[in-house]
Amino acid sequence: MLKGSQPLDPNVCKKLGLKENNGCEDDIYSDRNIKSQHIGEMFDDLFSFGRKHGVSLKTRFAWKRRDIAGRFHDIKYAVRNRIKWRKTLNILRPWEGFDGLFLVMQTHLADYISTEEECGHSHREYKNRKIATAKETVELLSRMREPDEYLHRRREEVEAKYPRYKSLITEYHSGALSSCGDFVAQGKGFSGKESGRNPREGYFEFVDGVFELTDSPDQGETDRLLAELSKYHEDLGDAYRQAEADSDRDFERLGHLLKDNLYSWWD
Image (cartoon, rainbow, N blue to C red):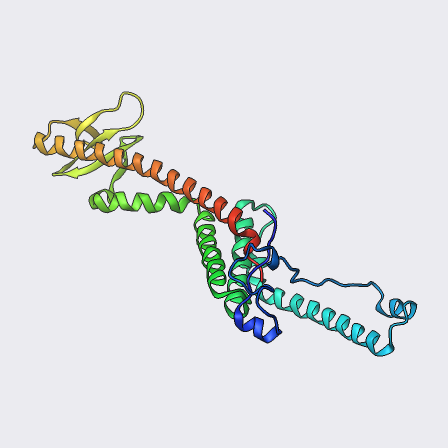
C-alpha cells in the first residue's frame, strides 16, 4: 500500500489560500486530491545553477537563505531528538530483539501523536482517526514488550478465585530428602498430591520429622480439598491457553493496524 494524499483541514486551506478540489475535499481518494505535500531540494549548488541559467542574484540569495534555514532545522531536530530520545537510548541494548524494536516504535509513535494533536494539518475526522489508531498501536506495543504479563494477568484472575492458594505449599522435607507437590493446610496436616512419578495423594502429616500419608481426620474435607486443588490446576491450564490466545490476538491486531495505517501516520 503506497502513501496517498490526505484531506487538509479547512482552516489550513484558508491559510494557504487553497480552493476546494485542491486537497481540501473529504474524499481523500479522489484523483484531484493526489498532490505532493513534500518539496525536496531542487539543486545541489544553488548559486552555480543560478549563474548558469541567468537567475537573478536576489533569487539566488532567497534560495540560499532557504537552504540555510533547512540546515538550521536539521540541527534543531538533531538536538531535539537527542533530548526526546535520551531515555530510550539509555536503556536500549544491542542484544535486545523484539523488546528493543517495540520500544523504538513506542517512542516514535508517542512523539508523532503529540505532534499530530498539536500541529496536524489533516481534516479533523481523518486526523482523529490517525491519532486513535496510533494510540491503539502504542498500547499494543506496551503489552507485547512484556510477554510474561499476558500469563501474569490471567494467573491473577485464577488466584483471585482461590485466595487460599496464594500460600500454597509446593515443597516439603522428609528427613534428609526434599520433594515437592501441592498441599493445602487441613487441621494439623495438609491435603494434596506429590509431584513426580507414582505420586502419593491424600492427607499428610509430619510424623517424627517425616512427611507421611496418614488417615484423614475428615475424609470428606480432604476429598473436597483435593477436588478443589484439581480444579485449580485445570483453571491454571486454561489461563495459560488464554494468555497465549491474548498474545496471538494482539499480534494479529498489530499486523492489521500497521497494514492499514502505517502510511497514514504522517502530516
